[in-house]
Amino acid sequence: MTSPDEHPRTDGAPAEASPGLRDRTGASPAAEAPAAPGEGGAADWQRLHPLSVWASAVVVAVFVVPSAIVGTVVLVVAGQPLWALAPVPGSLAFLALTTYLDLLRLRAVRYRVTAERMEMRSGIIAKAYRSIPRERVRSVDVAAPVYVRVFGLCSVTVGTGEKVGAGSYQLQLLYVTAEQGEWLRRDLLYRGAARTAGASSADGEEAREPGETELASLDPRWFAYAPATTATLGVGLGAIAALVGMNAQTGGVGWDWISDQIALPTAEEVSAFLMARLLLVVPLGLLGLLISGVVVLTAVAVETWWNYRLTREADGTVRLRRGLLTSVSLSVEGRRLNGVTLHEPFVLRSVGGADVRAVATGLAAGDAKKTTAKSRLSPAMPRERARRLAADLMRAPDSPLDAALAAHPRAALRRRFTRAVVVSVLGAVLAGALAWLHTLATAAWWEVVHRVEREIIPVPLASTAVEATPSWGWATLAVGITAAAFWYAVGSYRGLGHGLHPSYLVVRKGMAVRDTVTLERSAVIGWRITRSPFQRRLGLADVAATTAAGQGMYAASDVGLEQGLEWADRAVPGLLEPFLVRPGSDAEEGAGVRGGRGTGRR
Image (cartoon, rainbow, N blue to C red; front, side):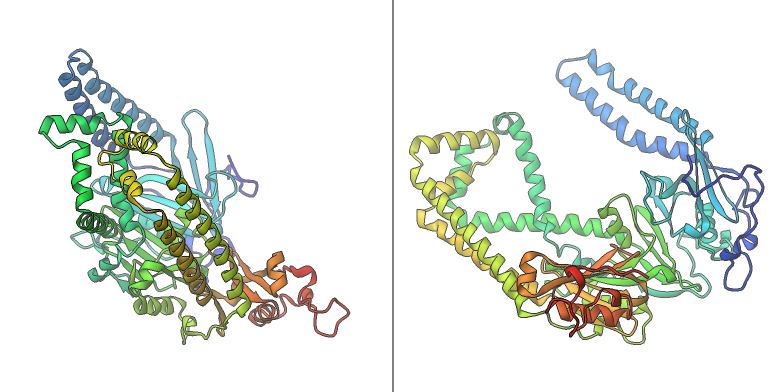
């Protein structure tokens, strides 16, 4: 299977180096690149490492065999001795089948790197051939989960940053040796010879490369910022929801069975006990949720960002290395790093933290979540440290993040106040409806609600608390919604801003998640101006710069039309000129761009 512009070579000989692929010294990088460690020439077809089969077998065995043993014990306790003989042999048979399929895959997969392309053949029944021109390689990710690291292996993902059909934007090798992975990373990104065995220290840490500059390394104190997220309470709530779901599946039998076995009080007795001490139970419950979330999120941050190092290599490539159980190496060519994003979610921003993300070509993944994860270049850290790191990445004499940002018109604030009024009205209607229903509820109706809740929730408290709430108490819900809506509107307006740096344009927006984006002016390939009917009435517009990097479009939202067009014209002079209507022209008065919407491309 070959994309339209990718043609396989039929002679099997190494291709001549393309003039467009020569490095800065004028020599062909492929001609200077040595053979992969332990293999033949650079253009020879190579196999995945045989140990990859046994690494996969170990992973399957770790999950399948213990589950089979637990299933056997459960069946014996349940009085099913004959069925108890099935799980362990069945799991072993499944393990043997997956190992056999991996052996077939090992024999079927071949890859090679020539002076012009990276090629891969795969498929057991349906054979496939795929290739990527070397000039289209945008990223090489080297990942080593702990279960393959013990075998000295790693996975290599070669990406083009494009997505033309499912999976055709990247090639993935599962698995090759660590030396082969490093050789592929260097050779495909034209960065000189492969590392020798002496380049690694005894504990497996990589030595500093010649000409490498360290931009950031892990400070353990940064882990204190990991729980600063809205998910902190959600982790504990997720565990509670799982228990509630299990109890609901049994119709409340689970709680009753546990109570009978260890002589626990009934659900009614526990509910009455807790309701009598509500002022103590609620703070302790929230504290328990907070502690569980802090522990889990800190553990996740340690696994993700342990051994974190961000460096710039001699050729300008920015390289990220991180990971405790899964070691990850991500390289972004310097010329493809077109800016950065200072990412500040509300909770993290409240404690003075932020993280840095790349605005670069070649970091596209299968979905938006994976793309965002690949673009992240730092853990959560102090905001000032994040700003310094962003400035180092952009290599500008003065940081674009320090550029003065223009305020947006007050009409943008009025627009947000209008939304807040709508939300407040809906909140008042909701609170009034609940208060009205509360007055209609009878004792028999509440009894039904309590009975249903007892069958779903082990410790039924919600319906009891609602029943005890006075009708006027629902007004506090409406007041709370109104206060939150207007507070959010003001914060959202204060977050708006746009500006210019000699080499970058800067855009800031967001309340729940505030992003300050810097984008090289030379990377802007077009402009998109959009105006909704409400924006046209207020004289506002969304002026978005289109680019091949990052998310593809970065907008100054709810900016004054004339203000936004002037900003866009100054950012990339001449690009928007054919679409502008200058004052004094024959066009309709007040129109800044033909049709209210314009797009320019180089």
